[in-house]
Image (cartoon, rainbow, N blue to C red; front, top):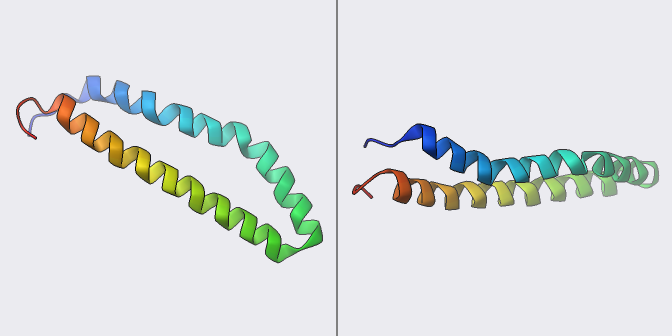
Length: 80
């Protein structure tokens, strides 16, 4: 399969970068909330971080599964 990688990377970055930047932007608030919860209840803090991690991972997996279909359709020519 001959994919056109240089143009495909632009689509990859356009899809991935906003999600990744959102994670980094939210990190200070996430840390603050985790510290607050940790002072009250370590189990609650652990649950918060675990749930957040699972939620973010599900979002990333969906993003890349959808992106895979888009890239293969758009950049593989007649081969799908």
